[in-house]
Picture (tube, helix red, strand yellow):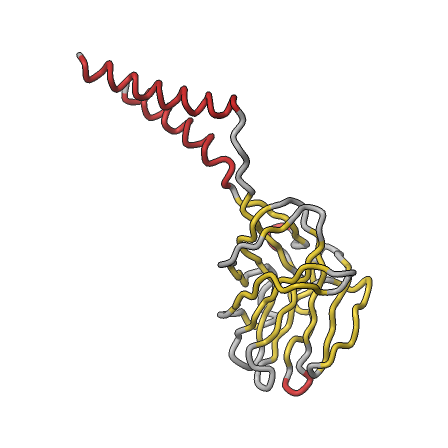
Length: 214
């Protein structure tokens, strides 16, 4: 009897939680999060202050949960800000959110993406729309960092500025390695799903009632 109650409750919870599973809306990571270990794009580097970011297209709609990057540090604090922008005519548009990444691995020593930055504002990303991810080092005068190239051959538009001066948007550039995860937009449950949940809960309640009435 107890097993039946537990199974009914688990079934109901499984249906209810199925809508909350995180989704990958964009990724250029290889199997197991693979990246190109020892080659990438300079970020920061003293007076040069390189800023290089990339356009990507969302594959599914959802609220931003986190971004996993292949991104490492050399000398410096090992901290950077990762800014997400909307797209405006194949250039960065409105700022959607800025997230801090710290505790980076030393560049060139890892072969899988291991820098995770999490969203607190959870802006909505729309399937088919384009966005930009652009990092800036925390202290350009001291920090030297690098964004690992992806290992899957992904190319696209690159934003580039040097010394605080915008240089241009460059096509067909090898994109830095990253994955964007979103929380699924919770749909209104279909009547059949509501019926399944209700049936499971009512069945569990009925079983409990019969058990304790004996």
